[in-house]
Image (cartoon, rainbow, N blue to C red):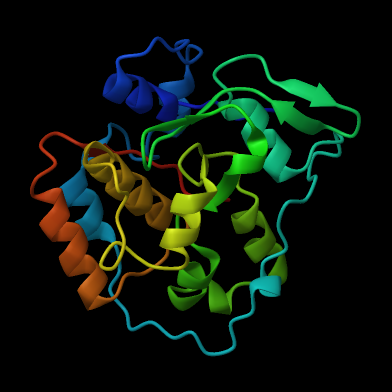
Length: 224
């Protein structure tokens, strides 16, 4: 039911806090189909370059927060349950009422889920601009509810998610400087997973930021 979360390992490194290790085999599940993880620079080089267009975009084109596996928990609840660093409190109807979440964008720990948004790593409008406008409604729904890759959706403070809005890394980066290389890797991995393009300005921004990211790597599995 729940996705394996490795993002928390990065958060734990930033804050030097303990975190339960990911289950055996998780790394293999996240590895690219072609083999070992690639460098961030190599990942960026694989992104197709194309002009972006917002024409025709509506947020409702991406049906989200659905219950695909019919277990009573929608996508938002699934992410909250998966990413809580303590056993979450779950009430009737799979309503998550308490837990502990680390918002890696700003380094803030949250215990009340009302203070969290579930961020689409690559915002829905940006996905539309980058190729999703040509997808079927079913594929856009799959993108908006992608629980099979821990980079696709992330619980973060509502404040940072709303400051990000639909901006790409040319215009917005996490306020916590130590999170930016992880964020760029997550962004690139998500675009590669879904075969989304970048425009020239976005590619230049990714390349510039990646130059300061040392050994940061990119891992992804192409979306079905």
